[in-house]
Image 1 (cartoon, rainbow, N blue to C red):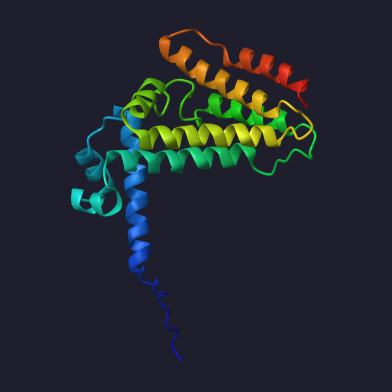
Image 2: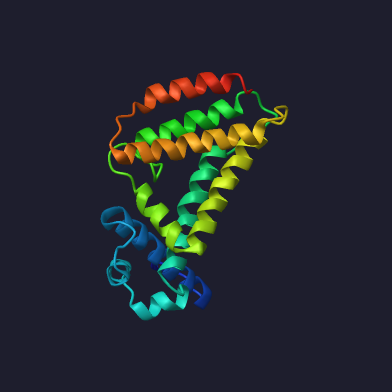
Amino acid sequence: MPYVKRVSRKRPLSREETKQKTREALIEAALESFAREGLDASLDGICERAGFTRGAFYVHFADREELLVAVMDHVGEKFLASVFAGLSGAEPGSLRTVAERFLTAVSDGSYPLLAKGRPMVKMHQLLDACARSPKVRERYRGLVEMSIASLAGLMPNEPNGVAIGQLLLATIIGAQTMSELGVELDIAVLGAQALRLLHTAE
């Protein structure tokens, strides 16, 4: 009997899967556009980059603000998950590990707001978007508060864990602002000093 090559046929995507892929493509296109052109990148340009029409955009997002919130969720939660992955307050050195991961992300460009060279999103644009949109402000505040709570969770025996988490976030946000103002920051030196201070909190 002659050999007959079987052709594997991919299962067609369901309507829900197609919608999800379209949404993800629009978020990825927005992220690229925001990195290149800032948060005021045109919706038409974002749709064109994703390969969809404005009509498709409005199926998934009510407006630009909703798209920006979706991008913040996509980038922010993914980043936080990578920094805190596999750590708990029960393990000695967890806080130091988070700090080291964060510094590595800044150095290799994967932290979106303080990347070495060109940040993915500029701090002043994000703060401007927060000032204009309660929706965006709430989401950014939510990510900041999530970070503080996660840091405090790594210091279960420290009564001032939340305050230390707030101090660390204030330092990061301040460094982002200083960097954008053109203040020369040596992230490696700052990081080494932060790690020294953190040693006392563990």
